Image 1 (tube, rainbow, N blue to C red):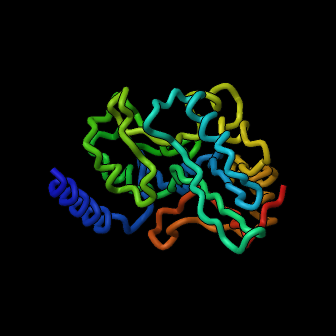
Image 2 (cartoon, one colour):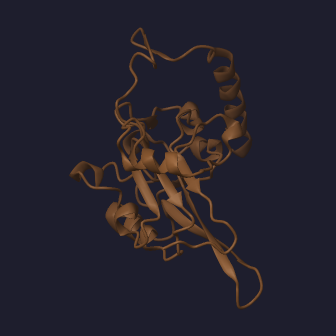
Length: 226
């Protein structure tokens, strides 16, 4: 089974490489012509994160994520330095909502998709057959099989919960230090655009060409700015 999945990925990647020489055409129009007005993204400010996991628990409660799996986690590394001046780094691990998402490219049923209105990478659970191709394709290892729905699952920026109610994602609302900034990259007056302009940021594995929309303001040694 493992070999067949990897063979599928190799064939799919070869196919994509062979045809992706121009923008996608949808109903005769290109991406540039049908560009959405909203492109959601998120910033994790590591200089403000204290590793409290309030975001993780808020996500679990809001989106009814079963125990044993998680849509996001805060990875702790360290301690660094010498006692008593030791410090830790905290990094968010979740879906990066890629603009060119490998998980979407390999999905054989259309269950994995990018929402045309918001740019959110999401999952049609009713279309998912649990083949796990998307799990293998994701370079960020951000997907899992939900033990209740038996479908692929991941962070969707609370698309079906908080966003529908006009709220921010649960993780953003729960953060006690304002270490998370969520918003529309297409809105020049948004807080996320202002934050990106004011800070140096990084994104994971940009060399893969996935164009992830999880930005990191990286912490310097010993730096936590509350």
